[in-house]
Amino acid sequence: MAEKQPKGDMTVKQAGHKGGEHTADTHGHEFYEEIGKKGGERTSETHGHEFYEEIGHKGGEIGGQKGGEKVRHLIEEGKKRMGGNK
Image (cartoon, rainbow, N blue to C red):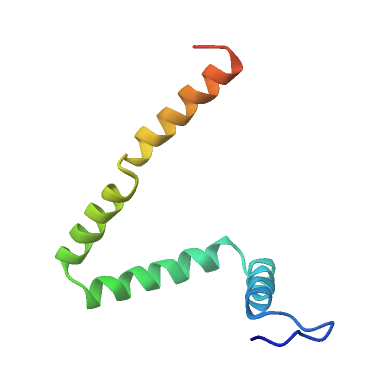
């Protein structure tokens, strides 16, 4: 059983969240674009074309809908709730 933490201590989750907020405050949008690009390049170097095909199919299987279809459905539902059908 986990011991209670003394006041002032934080969980790993809280520390990670705080660190993420600090990083977002100190680095701009370009920072995230750069690290995303580096990660994508590294992934493409270590995985082949088949990897991207596989994760693409898995993504489509999870929700059963493509992203645009889900957005369209949510918009329609919102219109119905608002009483309009424009």
